[in-house]
Image (cartoon, rainbow, N blue to C red; front, side, top):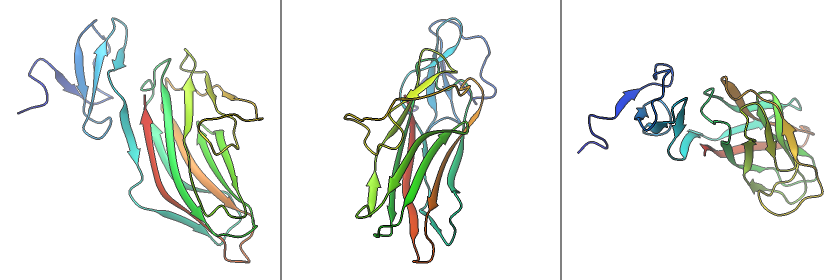
Length: 196
């Protein structure tokens, strides 16, 4: 039995109708794991549910360089977040257990929203970075960069940015080692991205 009837038309993100009649529902087949439903509000198409946008297919490791190196990159389709949307990024990484610094970055549109420094006894880290549009597709806030916790308090200031999410933008995950002489390694074991 199909998920929806004939009254719900299917489109790709690029060929969806530019007119979004109020109440009309469409399925966008190239968004999310099995497509995503959108409802017209009279002026634009609005997501009806959370979209699992990306899932890292295999672990990626960094070793042998002190240069910041991109481990994963993806394009977020312009307009998908909406004016009040959130981009949730959930990484899981591991690194060599020693006193050498290892830094993990999450960047959207070239802006660093998270820079986590991993040092002694930080062998594995999992956290969430939530990038929030603030009633505008070109204004964002996020928890204090450098804090590996997605909830709680921080002495750091809220990260602010002006990435134009109405246009396609790049989400990049990178890492940097401070010392390669001791064989330091950084591995991105998992990464998934949701849009809510």
